[in-house]
Length: 397
Image (cartoon, rainbow, N blue to C red):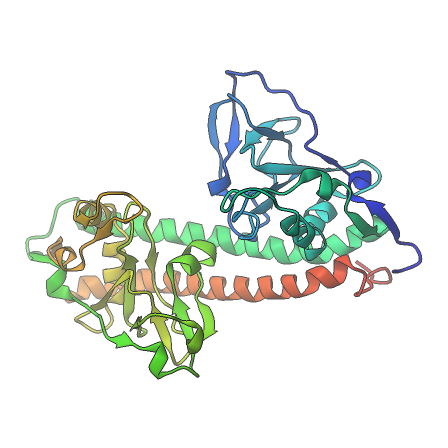
């Protein structure tokens, strides 16, 4: 430990679950557990609703899931969506950490809680029945940590914040691009705005099955145990919208083969839309058989197909053609999606549309790749900075 760092209990530098007031029945912002993204600093959204109870917090506070598997899955965030002096609330399964003024920096506390220094002891302290285990708050309060001086805390967080700030910028750009692409599709193929608001007479009524094919070419991990595959799975989509690269011997079931022309949508629980345009960054891109894979029958029309799958009418069609009795087991029927009605314009219109939206989708992919690289850098630096292994005290920041 560096000579100017001190060993303190966590409760010496933060207030855990600080007291706040909200009147029952009043309207307030709520951040529910399912709104938090795994290993993401920023809170992506909230709902304005009536306060009936829950954990309360302010801007700058760190909220950490205390229940399994949310904590293990990286549900920890820093509240940043409130106005000055505004109080919000959320799940009773949060632990709230508030930096003590003059002792700890709020950004430093967030990264400390995110680091193995706090996460690992918190996970080990969990007690309770299987599937409902919770962190013991008193164990976290008494956790001893090495704490740098306040100015060095801020120097450490400057480095980590710069990375997370860039990831957040990429995320906002991607959301904007996705919205623009959807609006362009709506404008061209539903509202016909570039065509005077009326469907051109040379457009034809057809179906998705006449312009796209289902792809079900199977790949066996047991026959290729030493291959490193680019695996597009449901959990990978939900966690990072990014494939997992793993050795085939760790994969237990057959997968579908993807190509750079593939687009896919989840058939599992279609009410939760999971549409993916695979990046195909390696020689072996594969996906879960819980996805339906399509490829355009004409070259260069991949993003026209993708935009159809991303549209509200297709989502409604998908959800109305399912099997299974419960939400957790409902699946769309792939062949019935081929009956989805499509108004097909001439090839030159489709080409013009793809010329417009493909650069948007390509930039989304590029930003996603960059954000994953930045996240790996951040996660490599995080434990080393928080432990003092990397010294930033002499850096001119």
